[in-house]
Length: 408
Image (cartoon, rainbow, N blue to C red; front, side, top):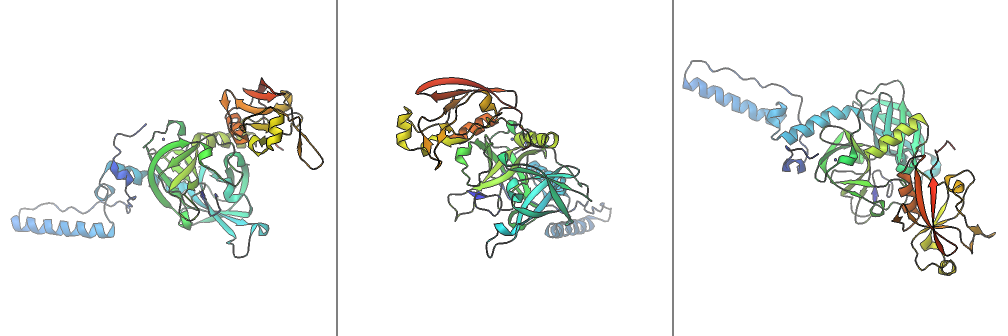
């Protein structure tokens, strides 16, 4: 897994008019200009032929220099749509430069982490959390080259999202969110970003399929509350992180996050994005409350497959699938539901008998703590989840009412 930015991991109805041209490289069009079309006089065929030759030559030259109307330069309706969406959206997209703190730099490291963001309100920009995670200062560069400082307004590491606020400048354009839940395999998607530090880079491809986080392993401890990712053939490369993934209406249906590759030596060719529905919900929460309001048990968990087999045997378990409840802080949803935590000795080693072991959530079997976290995170405060527990060598069902998150 290669990230959407230069750090290691750090590796949407179908339109009837779409055709195979959507898979070709994007076509750029110059500023529209109506070609000069002289009228036919009555000076005879020779004059007519001469004028026709002049027009042909003029048009040929125009194609070389790009001075033609979009309708004449572009061949298909899909090409025209791609260009129109790109031209209308570019002004909302910015380059994000994050100067890293010295303690996170190794000799020879570039001190600037480059990513992408976009205005969703007149002074607010969304980007990836991993772009600004270790920042000392942040600046953004607008599509016209103007550069301004930015400050972090809110963060949501659980889905790898952050909000930046700018002052002294008003968004030349803002983007609105569409509905990522309505994406259809094969639907065209357009990305805009700063891959390899090339600003205003436009890519086009299709939505492929939603995938489980199990299929998108990452080692940065971010995105643990993303239930599904968008996969796309649209180019998402280092520097695209935080950029918009747009449908053919120009609505944001995803935020570029990572790319997938067979190994660290091969550039990632499968783009990975965070669903726009999830991002929009997070932005609303961050602005109104200051923290995301996805469900959480509030307890710490340990993957069952990491335990000593002898401990599992003492607990009467013959499977390594599940998540052990470790610590149960007072006042959490888990504590209110009387979940039982585990005991440890002075060396922090787990002791028998073990605490509760979560083996299923709302009827879905879980393999590890990550499964528990993402399933519960799909809920909202006030909702209830049913945990199937292994407690004292017996199966027990416990209902947990999720609580509202508060600022730490």
